[in-house]
Length: 218
Image 1 (tube, rainbow, N blue to C red):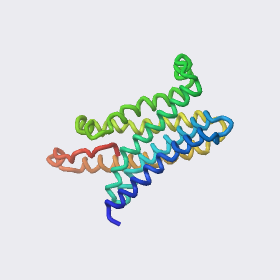
Image 2 (image 1 turned 60 degrees about the vertical axis):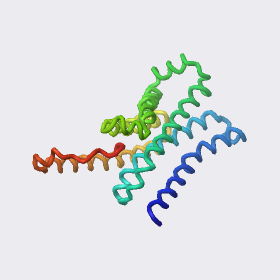
Image 3 (image 1 turned 180 degrees about the horizontal axis):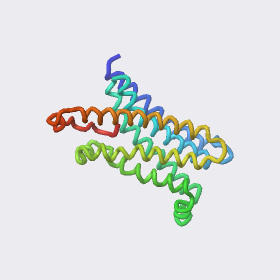
Image 4 (image 1 turned 180 degrees about the vertical axis):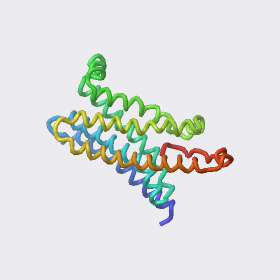
């Protein structure tokens, strides 16, 4: 299998996998199989899907470096957009269906409930990442684009904290997701440390010549 065919298959798997939760929820809402509390089910599934996709997005760079398959990087931006889609859907279900679009209640919960404050902050930080995920914005922002998109680490951390604080009894799943996040961040810390060490060991004239920053935060 050549790289082009492999990338096509990967994109198909990504689209099917990312759209499946939305399709399942849509069918469930129409056919009434979301249980006795459909709003809670909608809120949980959309939030969990957003977190899982964020973690998969952060896993792209480590997997690419371990496998050496560079075309993998091409699925990272669409994954990030899917994460934003589910995060926005998660927030919309809570605001519209749970709180009846009562903006004063929404504001009160955001200000007074720490787990909602953290989750809302994560959504706010994710929004500019989604809006600048086009080739045009990558060209306009240049190196600043990669710097901006490092906010994905903060967004994922806040999203996991939101989930951990939300769960009141069994925290095994939140802790598992947090452990995955820690491993993915440890990979990046190791890479940053290696780069810094390499720069310190370069001659002064070699430091002036830097490779262009690749699109996207590793």
